[in-house]
Image 1 (cartoon, rainbow, N blue to C red):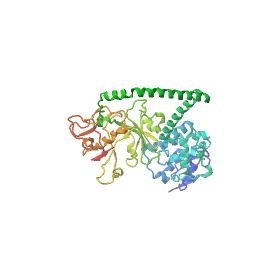
Image 2: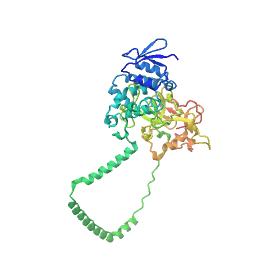
Image 3: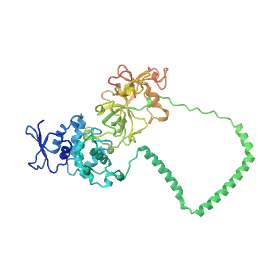
Image 4: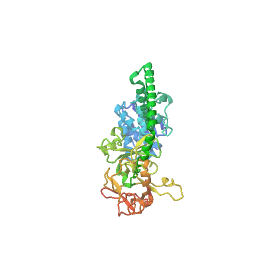
Length: 481
């Protein structure tokens, strides 16, 4: 490969890091000039000017990046961050945006390494190194940038050649605010509430020690007096009370009727995945931002201020609808490209759970091959998985239900009643690739079994309010969950 000639501007901090880290690049450094703007001369004598343009060109020559496939959205994100961090120093609003972007990500793209990690690191390294401990890890600090900086400068996968004395110092002992998993925070709140209540009792009135003893003696005497009177009453009237109790007619016990378990209790809706990224703390999980027709102010909705969406996604879906954050165990089973800007079917009334530090407020329905009898019960998870797809034209938030089981769903399924666990085994796919509820698969028989409308057959297709049928791509006789 013919050599490229590069002239580097003295103010350029990005290209020197790339050149020192990836020494196999076929580049000759020009020492004849000191340009105001870095430029690269190609073998055909064509000149390429500007650091971002040069960085993009060099990334095609670095095997780590050249051998990685980037989607159109990911490529747009790379260019976005190269552009946003071009200012010197990097603007404060860009720093804040980067910190938010890295909240749920290991790298700028999520998990994939890219030239953006190298370039942005080079550009903000000096600013980060000058931050105080409060700016780094205080209550309003840029903790996610600090975590990312520490990863980028030390991971052998990226292979940056940075002398130890030039790395940003990250001292774990100087972390000012530790974030705790949600479960521990809840426990802490309970303990705090108990302590606060105890403190109120201890401090109420601020009574002197002598007064407390005096009051205690009065209470003790009162208790003795009351006990003596009660004993006398019981002695004189005990027999009469027992006689009255025996003569009192016995009331019949009221039998509480259990509610009928039915698929109609499950809140199934059309969901629109706006954006999906790998979970930063779990290799098997995706984290999706999904619109499903929730009203403003719903406690299940993720505020827009807490979202970390690329500008290209924000621009595409402006004005942003209400969305929920949803974790799904589909990483490695469904290509992430199939999780972008697509309609799915979601279960919207399961109790929210926290999955490896991220609250998940719904579930995406997907089909997988049915387990083989007497075989490995987890084998289906290693095979093809297909998302349940609503019909074309379905709108986010549109109700979805099984034929013969249309009713108002419960607000939240009670986990203790195991409603989902009892009904889900009936979810399956047919030879026509329709998603259905087969009541016989859960042992329901009879013409009016368990909430089924009279006269309906044993199988009900999954349909939308507008009448279309929900399907899968190719899996016949699959399990849907």
